[in-house]
Length: 444
Image 1 (spheres, rainbow, N blue to C red):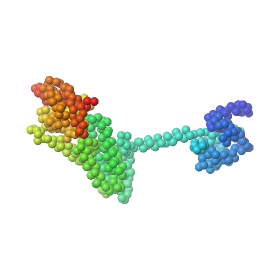
Image 2: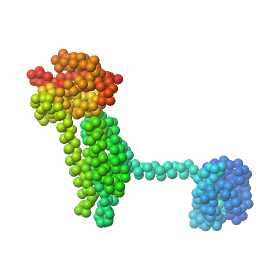
Image 3: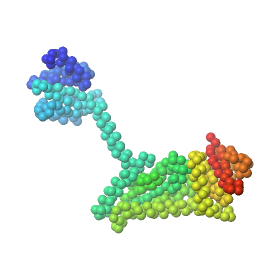
Image 4: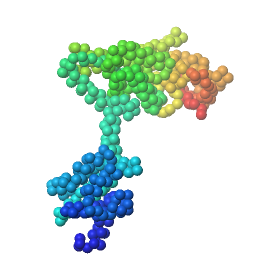
């Protein structure tokens, strides 16, 4: 059947539909016939038939083959090499770059030996799409490998990358490598759980990102890792190692400034330096971690002291048990409301707790306050004090449970906003007001 010209032509053209073109080459005479579905035979330097396939390929190479691939193609597609390759396998291929009108494409020559052993079929395949797909896969794989070691929220290296880094440092330590020097800085974001509970996880994420930026900006020449929800580690080497005392001091000062301004982030810091007595990285890390927790306790103590600055205004300080009870009620209130500014006052001791978001937005000194009513009145617009007083008295007198009150209040930037407050009172067994609380929302 192959001797039938019509059938032969139909098979060849059908095959050519899947390739740029197909060559049928006589190995004895070098005569060839071209079949193409996309290239007009006899045009653009593609003759429909020729007497010297190998000679024509070499002669036309500089017109269609990328200059950098011409030598490779001349060797790979020579008659001697094709016969050699096909003597060992039924088919082989050569990939190269073509260039036409300044456009580079990736192509592939596929050579197949016919049954008569006297002819070969050479299929020219456009593999540009295939090449780009492979390059994309390589890029995606590389990106995936990078992302597997990156924290999604902050972009710094993650716990997996940290463990790999620790392993490499431990190898250096165990090999007694001379000149090994580094410091470990442990950082922890203060009150992240409180921020998440009172302002929401999106605000907590912003605090984490802000902390990450501050740490990275401080230790610009050292790797930074996020190893927990609120914990970061930086391993100082080189210039950062030499300047470690100054950099840690700078970070603490920045954090202290944020704490006083009631802005994020507030970061507890601990630093430890590798010494000859350390056998593993963990020895250094644990010292830094302990020092960080000491710093965290110090920051908490400062906050507590500053939160009770107006202690001299009261006759009896609130007992710790009552304060714990207030905190428990406050946490329950936050869980139930799920948003807005929350406040809760222990009327027996005139001691209150307020949402951190309200403290931050309106510039109060602490989330804990004695005589909060006097302090809060300072930010209320003078023309609205009567409305506030009337509403508060109505709730406390029991005349208006969950009384709605609208008034203007001054934020710490000096601008006034309209607040919408709903308050409530919890009474003791004798019916006396014991707790006064509520939710304050911005009146959009």
